[in-house]
Length: 298
Image (cartoon, rainbow, N blue to C red; front, top):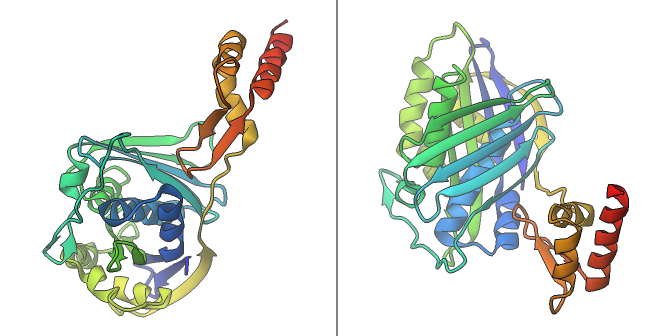
């Protein structure tokens, strides 16, 4: 299942979003060949991206989240859109070996040591002339906790956010989900603060020991308060890379370097960082691309 559900409390004090992202995270981990700790980190980040790209009424909203931690799994990039499409990756060293699955501490698996210290940059594009961009230091290395801190401090929206990935016995993705609860301006923040504490101690992880529906997660986020269910959005791991983009990347080398590349043994491969798709250009295709660049230049 992969769906995002929205709701608002009947007294219009809070809004809540619940995302079930199991299929999204499984597909991402399949494409990037990730299990264990790597699956937890990418899955939590993808889930957060789905939640954060639906906070305005703009149908074309796009959110890019870049974690730049100094830990072995600290460099994560997510690109999410309000239509439910999301993609992302962890930047791993070429000789990287799988990291041990982190221990459960205070109710949930803590990944802060694997992410490390560094910064979080969030870019929100709602179709205006310039996108909004904010940068904050990572406070804990727990991706959702740092995003919660960002929303509360930088966007002035008191928030409770958590994202979980439950692993199976082999380190694969069994379940993945996340919840976000925010107060509206002028509403009391006590309920959100209480939810923050509960989420920090792993209450969502406990809930996900069994399959849950979006409505169950909404009720959990709102503490059982009566609410109105709003529109739902299907979610999917989706990338808009294609051969034209691969050609555009190679074109940045210039005609002479492309010819030199074509003269090297074998075809040239371009791999998309976001989804792992590979695009291959033969020597003849590279020479044709170089000639095309020369014609455009003349």
